Image 1 (tube, one colour):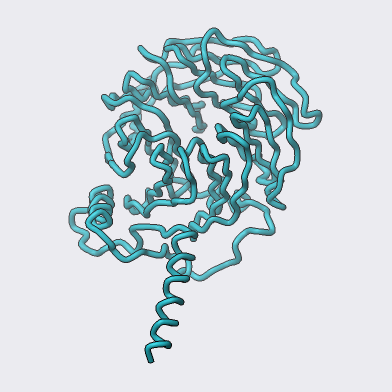
Image 2: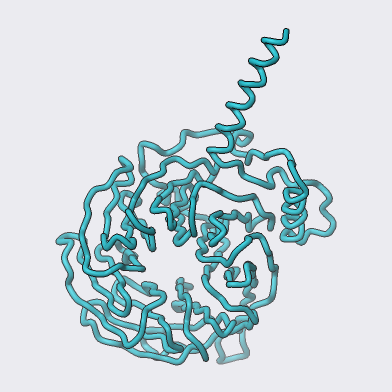
Length: 387
């Protein structure tokens, strides 16, 4: 288990969480240990997403960086967007979906790292997106005051709903029967069958992040040190607890056999893990770590195998390829900057005894490959003319 978080200082932090059995009659002990820090972006980090192998980060520098958590190396950068990367979502092992200030939603093959589809989704910025558990639908919100439903099988817009204010968060429930849309300090709860609002939750301050702990329980964090748990059916606040000394920037959750775990990241520099047992409220602190940085985004990498069903069931899905074809394509070093990136990836790996170069240090974007192909054809034509 690894905690990964980004910050305004352009650094990605990684902390390995060790679980040790506690003394008799006491619960197990969780201890976060610093694993790596990596300065790969040229601007502050704005989004992070994880699957069973990779961690990807988005930034205001308009790039998406990819990290292989199995090998602890950086695979390179995706450079299709023209603006800040606001949201990143994996669906299983095979696909990554990104949204940015350019209004684009891009669907990426998470094996070859090709851009399978690029959609002009919103007239303004794409502020948030969420993929349905089935992989057939996605929701997005933007600064054009619309909530859009996307048919991922056909890669087209399925439905557009006008909303009164710009929403900055949209999220499906784990079972996919409901979804929530957040505007400033208000959470509207929608039912999938009717596509209508079934309830509204209002907080005192702006909401910065939400996560479903279960199909009916929602954890809400905002521009304050308090985290609240709400019941989406009764709309009642089940409990609240002081999580940090400053505003909570991001929150996520996952489940272990004994209980649920809530993870929070704050502007105070701390990442904290909380044990949540529905029978015991409020959640109790498992562990904490101080990064001494202004945190912006958070993810938890769980080293586990995903099911085969966690693939997008689209006709546009890539056909089976050999292991050789799945290797990342590398671009030849053109400047000292590319050499610097290569050194950074080695540092991220932290493998002192391994002198073998990694197979891929930089993913070449689709546009770049097309441009290289055109230039190559022109060179061949010139050679033919001179001959």
